[in-house]
Picture 1 (cartoon, helix red, strand yellow):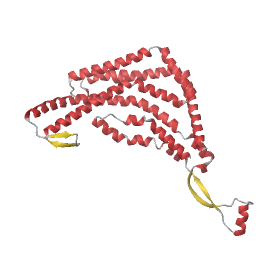
Picture 2 (tube, helix red, strand yellow):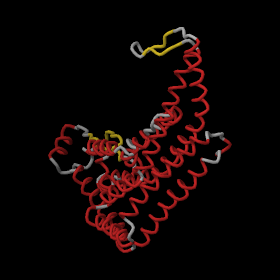
Picture 3 (cartoon, one colour):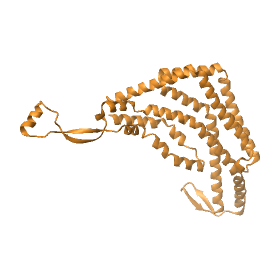
Picture 4 (tube, one colour):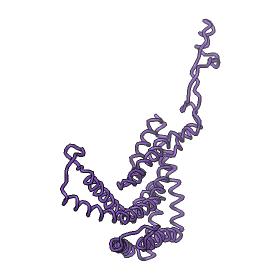
Length: 335
């Protein structure tokens, strides 16, 4: 019955929040549309367009390869402009934007806040797919350049990689191989700063844009894991959530058959008395399995960024299985 109470309380809380937020969105669509437009212009106007031109002017004192950075900036600008024009073609009318916002408000009123946040989350991910694509492209290019530099560095040391045995073997190179390796190493070394700057910039942009999705995910996880049912049961029936138990002499059974037997045989009857669990412990159990997993990914994320690997902290944060595992563990705990 505790599990049923928790599920009913969660559904009621989700419905109340969805009704409140949905009514606000439904009756104030212009305010929501203005906020979304401001955020979109900040990302595409200030964060991308202005900084793409800034990358071509030797940012932070880095000496970049002029032809390469010019071509890459032009291609990135083309991708951003094409995607932006496609979205504006589909959502150019103000009435269409207001209609979509009102539909989102009706979804929150009828289906709850969780469903509304799921639609918002998908919309954010779809509207920023071009930024993630550009970031992943420069990440792969930077990682490939690091691999080439590492292999050419082994050439100067008289080494080579042996992928069959997963080891590094010794090898003697002739002067033509060393000459070719020197030329390739010099070219890659001078192009390194250009790829490094572009990889770092779009990695930061991708993480900044993903912050919006992470905010939605945080609100969704807080609402989904909020222990309203367990708090109500904790207040009404504290013995259902014992922190510990102790033995106490039972002196309340007056007039019962057990008390007569106890009086005749001089037997003291003891019972287990539960000590109620503290209220902060309820929140700790509810939110405990989610956020420590995210914090544990931060050192791994730093290593991935330094090595040029695709960052997995965003996918770990946005992994809905964390919430499902946490919800299952909460049901097990209530039972």
